Image (cartoon, rainbow, N blue to C red):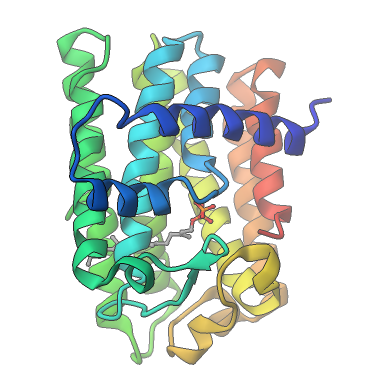
Length: 292
Ligand code: GRG
C-alpha cells in the first residue's frame, strides 16, 4: 500500500525542481520573470503534472517528456489562477497562501505574467524530445483543453452564470470545461507520451473525467467547510459572489455522495489495469478526502 501523501510530496518536489530550472537560460525581462515565478514557484499541489507523470509511468512511456509536458500544464494552470484572481474576474487577495500576483506586481504585470506562462507552455511542448506527430498531438490537446474549447470556455460560461439560477446540468457543463478539461489533458498528456491501446485510452479518459469532477465537487465543498490557512485561499467566496456550487444546489451531504459516485466510476474504469494502477486509484481517493 503506497503512502499517497508522501508520494505526492515527493513528486511535487520533483516538479518544483524542474519548474525552478525552466527559465534559467532565457533572457526574460527581469520584472516579468519575477512576476511569473512568484506565482509559479509559490507552492501548489502540482496535481496536474503529477497526473501526467503517473499516467506515463503506468504506460511505461517517456519519463522526461511526461515531466516536461506536466510542467507545461502547470504553467497553463498557474496562468489561469493569476488571471482568475484579477479584479475583472474573481478579485481575490490570497492565492497559495500569498498575496495574489496583481497585488504584488500590479494588474498590468499580472496579466503579462499570465500571458507569458501560457505562451511559454507551448514552447516547451514544441521542443519535446518526441516525434513530430506526438508533439503536434500534445500541442493540440493543450490548446483544446485550455482555450476556447475548454478552460476559457468554462470561465466564460461561469461569468455568464453569475447571479443566475443554474441547474445541476448547467453547473456540470461549466465544471467540465473550467476545471475538468485541464485534468483530462493532464492524463491524456501522459498517454500521448507513451504507447497505448484504444482500451487503455478510453479507460483513462473516463478516469480523468471522474477525477476532474471529484476535484471540482470537493473544491466547492471546501469553499464551505475548508480552512483558509490550510487551503491558502479565502473560503466562503463562492457564496459571497452568488456562484452556483454543488453544496449550494444539492446541499453538503448530497454533494459528498455525488463526489463518492464519481470516485467509484473512476475506480471502475481502471479495472482494465492491474495493481500497477493502484497509485492512480489512491490519488482519486485522496482527492475525495483532501483538506487542501
Ligand atoms: C483570460 C482574464 C482571463 C481569465 C481566464 C481560464 C481562467 C482565467 C481561469 C480558469 C478557471 C479556474 C481558475 C478554475 C479553477 C480551477 C481550480 C479548482 C483551481 C485550483 O486548483 P488547485 O487546487 O490549486 O490544484 P493549486 O494551488 O494546488 O495548484
